[in-house]
Image (cartoon, rainbow, N blue to C red):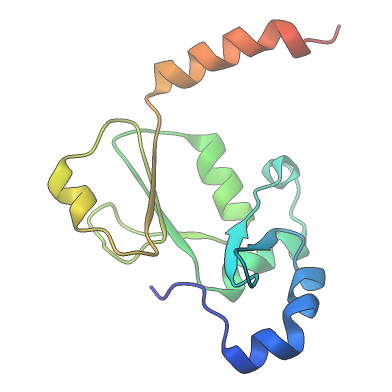
Length: 136
């Protein structure tokens, strides 16, 4: 899986066009060359082609290990990511429900990111914030 990288020629000519094309990508860094993917919650319920095209355009992949999260899987799929087998190393994002062994973390490439939230921690954070935003 290649990382999302813009060519020098493309970055000079169409850097602002890229930002306008995809509302889900924010370019950061000193010269605006580091892409940051923004996930929108509307993707969980809508099949917007503009949202879905970002993952398909850059051939983004994810894998979910040792947990079952339908919401995360749905949001990633609706953003154009495709799921790979848990034993595969061709992924951009790994979502896991437990802490990873150090040798697994060391074997990751620069473009591979890991998100590990045990399910009970997400629930604790959700229940602590719920009274602040609960609308009857």
